[in-house]
Each structure stands twice: as structure tokens, then as C-alpha cells.
Image (cartoon, rainbow, N blue to C red; front, side, top):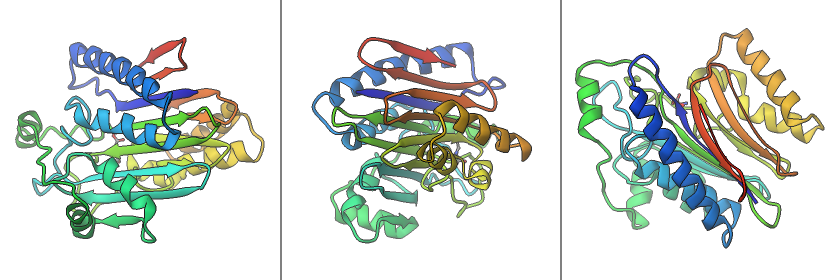
Length: 280
Ligand code: ASP
């Protein structure tokens, strides 16, 4: 059993050292909590659970604490993918739910599995997800101060369970100040992808991640026989050639954990029962 989670990028320009330490401490606690959960749950359930804990922590830009879009409204996106069935489900630009990842997870049982905007919210309400404002005063203040720091804190989890099954979940409040209607990479196969060989969650500039098809490329390369290291190296080389900004976490079916970023301020933590690693 293996698990790795990320809390997106840390913004050096406008976040204090204390915020960075707080994020690392939160990741440490959550990765261990999620690993304990993985003992008796599938990788799929655990990926959703870990991401829900990250969504509940206002330090991260997902769920509670999500960034505010250009028109002053919060819209969140999340997706989950089960590596063994290769099914993905998700919500795009959903408003006023506490845990977008749980709405995404609920959709896995539907024929129509990725819903956007009002349809996503209507589905959530009809399925017992209560109205919940995820806005915190600090984000409103940042919005009013026009702090355009862009994408800082999307969250994600990749898990491998005791049956050798992989899953991934990703959740975001977006990059902040975006044009309403903009679609993040997080609920696309570029930002969140898994099969039975490998699972990957990304963070960074959504447009770059989509242009580079980042998660899909890494998973496909590993499926075709490349090592995790080579698959990441080649994919990040291609990202560099379009001047892209992203980071990604992964686990392959052999249980190897990997991470790479184009700019070294991504915060993430991994745990395999013995070794707890927290990086930035
Ligand atoms: N990838 C997210 C987006 O573009 C932002 C982030 O990862 O921080 O919406």
C-alpha cells in the first residue's frame, strides 16, 4: 500500500514561511490519516477521502478556502479516476458544495459521469449534498486587493491499495480571477488520469497542463514500458518546450512513488507505512 498527496504550489512571492510550514504539517497529518484509512478501504475510496481532508483545510485552494473567480464567485472542479476500471467522473465549476470530490465520486455510478456548472450543482442537491459556502474571509480580502497570484494550492491524491489497484483524485478552486466559464485541468484527463499501470495528479497552470496532456502522457508512457523517471523526464521536457508550469505526483503498479515539478515550490507528502516524506 502506498499513498502520495499534494497541496499544489506554494507561492513564494505572497505566502509567508509560516504558511509553507503549516501546509507541510497539514500534508503530514493528512497523508498518515489517509494511509490508516487505506488499510481497510480501496485506493478509490482513499483517494476521495484524502482529497476531502485537503478540501476541508482552508490552507489549500480546494473546497473550503477556494479562490474567487473574476466575477467574485467561487467555482470548484474535481475528478476521480479508478485505475482498474479506467472510469473517471467529475464536476466542473460547481458552486456551494463542501466537498466537490464526493460529488465527483458519487457520479462514478452514473452513465453521465462529468457534469458542469448548474447541472453539477443540481445533481449534488438531488443527491443529498447540502448547500455550503466554501468562501473564507482571507480569499475575499485577496480578491478585493486584486492579489493575482494564480494557481496556488490545487490538491490531489494517488493511492495504491492492498489489491494492487490504483486510483487518483484531484480538486481545485482554479487559478483565481479567471474568466467565468474557464475550465481547469483538474477535472480533465490532462490533470487527473489513471489506469492499472500508473496514476497521476497534476497542479500548475491548467492551460499548460492541458496543452501538454501531462497526466495522460505520463500514464501512457509507463503503460508502454517506460520507467516512471523516464516518463516524467520526457513529459516535463515537452512541458518546458512550451514554457509550461506544472507539477505532478504518481504511483505505478509496482508501488514506486514519483514526483516532479517545473518549478520547485510544489508541496507534497508520501507515506508507505514506514517512511514519511514531505517535500517542497
Ligand atoms: N491547475 C489549477 C488550474 O489551472 C490550478 C493549480 O493547480 O493551482 O485551475
